[in-house]
Amino acid sequence: MDGQTDQTAASDEQTDWGPFGRPLFKDASARALSRVGVIDVGSNSVRLVIFDGAARSPAYFYNEKLMCGLGAGLSETGKLNPEGRIRAVAAITRFVALAEGLGIGPLTTVATAAVREASDGPDFRAEVEQKTGLKLWVIDGKEEARLSAQGVLLGWPKSYGLVCDIGGASMELAEVRDGRVGKRVTSPLGPLKLRDIKGGKKGRKAHINEVMDKLHAKMGDQNDRLFLVGGSWRAIARIDMERRGYPLHVLHEYRMTPKQISATVKYIADSDLEDLRARCGISGSRMALVPLASEVLKALIRQFKTKDIAISSYGIREGMLYEQMPERLRTRDPLIEACRFAEDKDARLPGSGRTLYTFIKPLFKALPEHRMRLVKAACLLHDVSWRAHPDYRAEVCFDTATRANLGGLKHGERVYLGLALLHRYRNKAEGTRFDQLSELLPEVDQKQAEVLGKALRFGAMLWMETTEALGELKWRPKKKELHLLLRPEAQRLYGEVADARFRSLCDSLGATPHVRFTKA
Image (cartoon, rainbow, N blue to C red; front, top):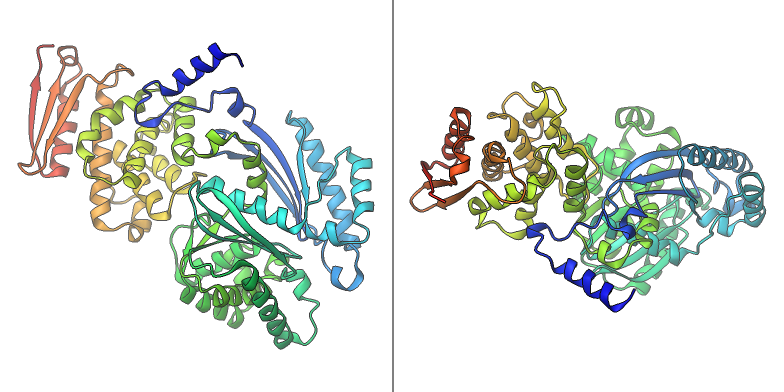
């Protein structure tokens, strides 16, 4: 790149793009990541994931796995499970054919503990290459830990704490801080290997505690958040939801306390596993590993004394995508980037979200930054569901926010965003799916989300331009007055419906409405 191009790019970066920053998903570096296929050959499952969408917060264009159990019996035989090997090769053959049919470029592949430890691992890799042309990248335990930690950073760019990834044959720990991966370590605490430990539950407990002592000696104290990555952890979280009667079945960012986990471990031990499996929608092969994984989790929490525990649906596959991202893309807010992508793809007037944000921002001056990002997100998403039937549009918006693949959102924040978008199309929340999730959002936040939604509902009436708002709001909270100043060209737009929506907004604020048309 020559000096002139460098200068132009720098100038473009500094252009006033308002509160959202310059969009990156249209840049060549981001477009190159718009559709990426990854095959993960694990000790328990083999999976194909094709990522698509906003490069910083990708959607799962295609996601398929087969529970092969490659690592079953590895401790005793030193070889891959013969039946699992046949199933794995067949699965990979299918995945390659699928990727070719979908027009996906070269697949990124990774194989973990079972393949790297088995004596016939090289032979398995040769067989895969001979039948599919695909070369498996076998990584060591520390590299597996690093990639899993990068997957966590995809969802939480500024996260800090301890990442624990459990697979079939191994368990990895990695430290994350300030957007970087620190110390890493691997261990043989995968459930498939624990099956082979002599001495039953007492023997396993002694073995797990011995390994945990060594892990703690290498990693040191880790009193920050614990991020749990892996199918067995997600299964335990799903059971925790069942035990608690938790209303939102979204595993990513699901939080648990040590006390809750202890209760769930006991709940698993006391339950009929087949009945529990059916109620929670967990596969039989996964459920067979859950009791073993729960023993590891209990010891992990006791050893590292973590208080804040979060489930991450992002792991090694997302870490491989993160590996390909330019640094300036990694530091972006995944929520805002995903919302911007959705607006650009689906809104009737892309760009109106930024104008709308500028217009309603005076109502939210007192909000902290973590809440203002939700206001930004709501503005970007306010019109992406316009194709839905009018009778169901509010519900579609709510479902999109609460259940969609959006990174960087706590469960309460999902409900807040969903409620705001629900009020964008409907005055009342009663009788909607919000009733089922209301316990996840304090009443003061429910009221704030209602104000945001009604501000979106009114502001959308004045959206004829995307570069400049046709009016201005002045909020005087002490006097409880909301002033609306409209430019002359907005007079034709400010009809009976617009006035009713403005007054509804004022009612939600407990404010007196004031409307004035300016001369210029």
